[in-house]
Amino acid sequence: MSILATADALQRPLISLSIPVLNEADNLDALYGRICALATKMADRCDLEFVFSDNHSDDRTWAKLAELASQDARVRAIRFSKNYGFQRSILANYMHARGDAIMQIDADLQDPPELLERFFELWKDGNAVVFGVRRKRQEGPLLNAFRRFGYCMIDLISDHSIPRDAGDFRLIDRRVVQALLQVKTASPYLRGMIAGLGFNQVGVEYARDSRTAGKSKFGVARLVQLGLTAVFNHSTVPLRLASIAGIGMLFVSAIGATYYVLLKMLHPDLPRGIASIHVLVLFGIGLQSLLLGIVGEYLLRIYLILRAEPVAIIESSINFAPADLKL
Image 1 (spheres, rainbow, N blue to C red):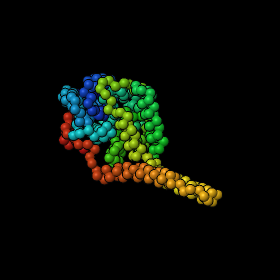
Image 2 (spheres, one colour; image 1 turned 60 degrees about the vertical axis):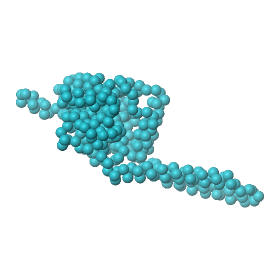
Image 3 (tube, rainbow, N blue to C red; image 1 turned 90 degrees about the horizontal axis):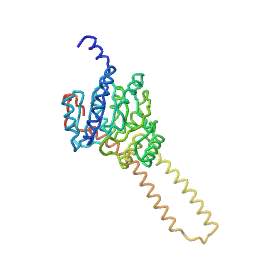
Image 4 (cartoon, one colour; image 1 turned 30 degrees about the horizontal axis):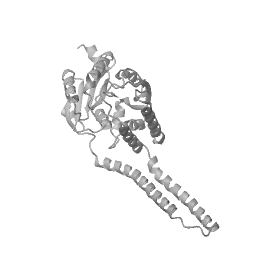
């Protein structure tokens, strides 16, 4: 290699493609073909590496990754000892990526990797976070409306603004990764964590494609669970709800007591209301249980942070030196 070619290679930034996978064997060939074509197209601007995290797939995903890695040193992969969840899988990839910037994509190709070209330009312009905003989804109107409502509610009650209709399809600068790894949380909600870090952030609208193969791992139950994680991780509104509800109940009780005293004065022969007492007691018990449950969610998160479990446990790795494994 000539001196000029060596200097040019040193000046080109390294971009890591972070790709969490779970039973995505049928998608890997199509994905690998597109990211290789992308690497060739952008070879004059940057170098790429492909960092996979396998959430303990039970199909041929890991074998397929080993096959690709044996042919291409850019393919690097870690396999977890069990399924640690999608958000932890992304965070583990961030910890093991070497790039000056890291782009998160899904293996199902619903988010086009070719958008890296646009993300890269905005990153070079000084934006530390470039995220995709889903202008259109290939899914039913009911589920789409449910997602939009969830994003809206999370943004409204969050302590800081969280982009709406934005998922985990993003490019982040190395500085953001370093700041992100200083945050201690047992249940990461990365789009909220990254939004709360600050830095220059910009969104890029795109139309999301349909899944290439396989089935989605995110049903309604998983979406609700992720939404609750977002609320409890990034909002103090539920905790303050206890104080607001307490004040409200005192106010309603004072009005009710005044009403019954006046009613008794006007109608001395009024019978005692057993039913109303039972209703009030049951309502009070239900409200207290709800508020204790909310407080319990926050206490659980404190407990898990103090327990300090690793993000994930790595069972196997490909194209990683032992010293490079950080979990």
